[in-house]
Length: 176
Length: 311
Image 1 (cartoon, each protein chain N blue to C red):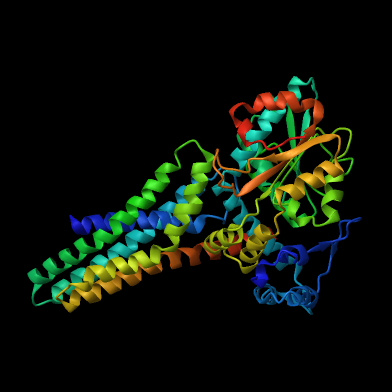
Image 2 (cartoon, each protein chain N blue to C red):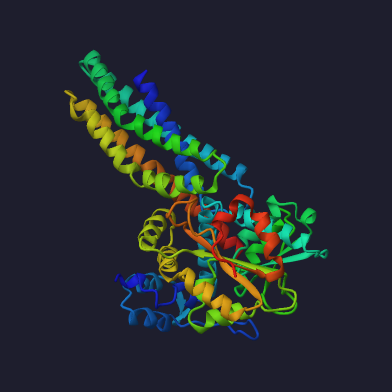
């Protein structure tokens, strides 16, 4: 259940990363299809990251001489990570929900005062979450896996951003 | 003061593209000249951003500059979307339109978006508002031909009923009944502000709405943080923050407007959030023909609290 929660959070993060890297790269007014595509790309990216992470986890587990202990250690680390990730995700989602209110001031304020800063601290939250998760781990495998997954998570937005920038450069070259 | 926030200096995008005012022909811009301006202000951030711009034998590469400006305007549109700028404009404009109609004006009303860039406001209106129902046509005018081409491309892509022209918004061929702009008015400094406003004084002009950053103590810091997070190019980050620092005080705008346009009642709209003292990011210099005033006040309804002294 804990690992499943982390997986769902990773997908949610991918979805939002996809939307974020797409923002400011298209100037049409009706953007629903554009953002849906961007979010699907983000989701696909998060799925790839999760699959790689799962592969690494299975590989380490298969090589381990103490599988049961490793599994328990991983579950405990993941549980601790959720203490950081879940409140952050709740804050982000709460502010996105606030944008449903029919007030331009409230909607703008969520961008300026909350979603912007929350985006800024995203890498710190990830680092803090993973470090807190593995801080009390007794097995080195858990620590290595945690750091490996952290690197994957942090690289997701960079890769998506790189791909979106390349596509934008192609579009601009074709336009001008 | 941080050199990049010195309001006395121009923005980078003011200098990296130049047009002949009469013929609108693009003029070459020497990189060294632009660098010299910002070196004079000790603005190393601007100098670094300019140094990175491609040039051919010292003259800024026009195609690269156009690409930069278009991508910057795409990013700026994202900010406008986050601020629900289209909604804000329409919320005020529709009340103005009703007031004008109730005054007996029957012909099609021409709304001119001055310095429209890639035409976000005009395209938003064309996409979201039944223009024909309100009897309005929307035109966007800008001195930058690349941005106008992009505005027309985007409008055609979405089959929007608005048009964009490269030229002077106050010329007889483009002039309109309502002028509006976003983030334009702070580019006019000193006597140029009065000159710009005075050009609204045409027989067919009924009103104007000029949206711009509202200056206050924390605006440059807030703008820096916001642009640091949101914008991708060094030029956009630099100019976005400088725009907030260069924004005119409400009193400057109102005094200039009342002096340049005595036939119009001028004032500031939307300076504060609700009934608090918290300032909105944008405020609006609003002006309208005096006979429209009573009906316009009526149309504002509960929004009347957002209206400053309009006289």
